[in-house]
Amino acid sequence: MRYSLATLTRRANPGMRRRAIVLRDIVAPATLATDLFRAAYAPIIQAWTRHAETIIAEYERSLSQLTTDSPSDLQARLAAAETEMERLYILLDAAVQDWAVRTEKWQRGKFRGAVLSATGVDLNTLIGPEDVRGTLDQIIAWNTSLIRDVSDQARQRIGNAVFSGLTERRPAREVAKEIREAVAMSRRRATGIASDQLSKLTSSLAAERRREAGLSIYKYRHSGKKHPREDHRARDGKLYGETPADAGQSVDGQTVNAPIAAGQRAGQLPWCGCREQGVVVFD
Ligand SMILES: [Zn+2]
Image 1 (cartoon, rainbow, N blue to C red):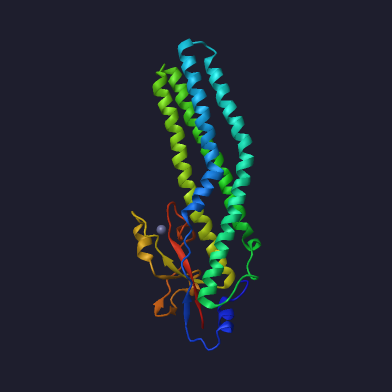
Image 2 (cartoon, rainbow, N blue to C red):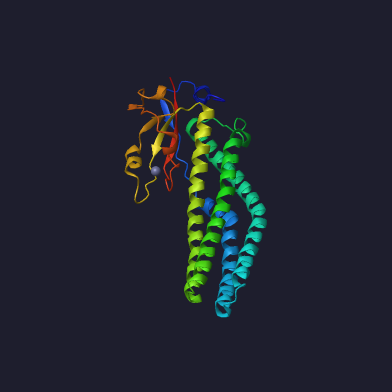
């Protein structure tokens, strides 16, 4: 804990009789996920879309000529694509950094607003980006490796289509379809990654901001998505503690539940859009 929000709230509101205050829900806008996709993943997909067409053309040529050196021409095309990706990575890594910094700023502003409207306490000078440096570095490192993974997977699928196609003398039309589908798969995967990474980052940041403020209890907020995880839906509106010591106490007539395992927390599992709202408890 870097400061006690409960203490600051009491000081700002003498004579207040409330036992607990739930901070409002913070929902990350989908545009932040779109931003990540556009800045860090889309350039890889665009580059592969372009290279896919030259590889398809080369395949057609190789198949018609049936020359022995044709596989090496295809190898060269794939290698050229890879060289371009290597150059792209430097720019994309910087784009991921920018995005993480912007998203942190957005989340911090929302947390500050939620605290201000619920308690009258302004956190402006109390919290800053440097407090969550570790979380940002982690998400940046993870995304830089995901970018490479998306590209490697596209290269592998395209390579497989081309070389097994040559071995089996498959018509160019069929192989072209497979190659374009490989690129489309990468695009779908990257779109999913971007929205998932946004949930992971914002939920991790929210947890850190609560920890700093000394808030060890939170209210679970189910995403309300279609096809929900039933156990997540069942948690909606319930209170949970960060540590076993928080469990069992009564807050505003609700009993605090035992901690949820770290990897199972809101926003951590794939496609989980659930959230955790901080609860300020006064004793
Ligand atoms: Zn969920």
